[in-house]
Length: 319
Ligand code: XMP
Image (cartoon, rainbow, N blue to C red; front, side, top):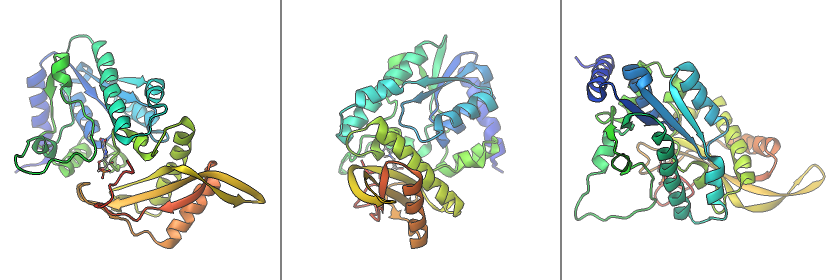
């Protein structure tokens, strides 16, 4: 009979057979897939693994610290924390087109990753948390319509360019199996159950121009919103929830003063695979309480809306 425990043993053996005594580089985003891949690899080859965590300045509140603490301090992994906020935010300055933003981020991501990877001596392998559905999706179908709604970035083509071979220890697994493997490997439930977070991060939750001020406000509002969702026990019922800061300021009144601050939109959806989604039917009490908290606790926001668009016709992210 097949158990995750056995899968773990076999996967570890397979990794050791494949890489021998060579060094492996792994891009770590803090998402479930790359985290599980990293922990599995670490168990298999220990110090032959170096993870690279790219901080593009578009992460959520406390996220970089969480990832670094977890993997470097708890797991004792070799981890490079690439603080490249200046670079990314500098190049994004003044850009407002969604696809342009994605392309800038995708390209910089590869540049930065390559820069750090080049510093790692005798690296021969690049590890990726590719899942089985990713493997199938990359098979091209002829005849069907091909419409690119959003150009997701990944490190496609990078291994060849860098002369590295690929290690993909999760490529036979579906998402729920990756979660089970992560649990088997002792990753905390809070990590395993995390909502998906897009590669371009907060950039696509900040429609229009990205500024540090907007990002800071967005991070605070998002933290309050997620705290509300957790406190009400709703986190696990929701596929993905986040705040988007809107490129508009509106007039409000607070105390005896007039305010002129940003509006934000709360987003929460249920979904099976992210391809289609329904907005989450929060109670009016929950929404009212959350709006009050955000406006009271987050300077810079004076209006909160709830996005009730499903996918299609909307997309989950705002860009
Ligand atoms: P959309 O907005 O297309 O999102 O309905 C579907 C799922 O994909 C995530 N997403 C991305 N993930 N790079 C990523 O790695 C991207 O450019 C990107 N755009 C959207 C989104 O968070 C949702 O889970």
